[in-house]
Image (spheres, rainbow, N blue to C red):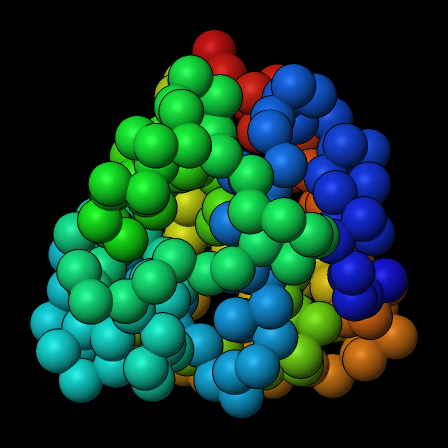
Length: 219
């Protein structure tokens, strides 16, 4: 289902396995902004951090708005403009994060506010929100890295972020995704019903299932 409102989006997150149930509305709303940002894009780029870095000069990042066609990475907050205001909360009055007074909040720069709300670090939930936004817009995803979808049974996390993203596309209506994947390939939505039905719950369940399957191969 598409998450058209903040309450729908929040409910979708709370249904997903392992999502921290005590996450504040302020932080959830930042995820919602990234979801909506991706829904407005016709094309998005997937790839490992080192392979996406050269593209930021021409494509920007989702933090900066602008062309915004790069998937969010762990270093994206470094490119957040000091002159921009952070996305306005969509569920009502601005929520000041816990542990920060209203007076302290108004003294922070836009970037400091963003870093506070995001905990100053990337999260898999932010990444998943951006991917689902792109899936719900039926965006074309361009791969800039060579990727294998096998997974590592001996790793704490069997799949890296780019593998997780591609498995999500495969689950939700994007075809031609299997085995060894080459940089430069574009993936298009060929089953819009599957794409429109994508949810955090089913995305996380698919990843847990895939991880269990991979771990069974461990010696």
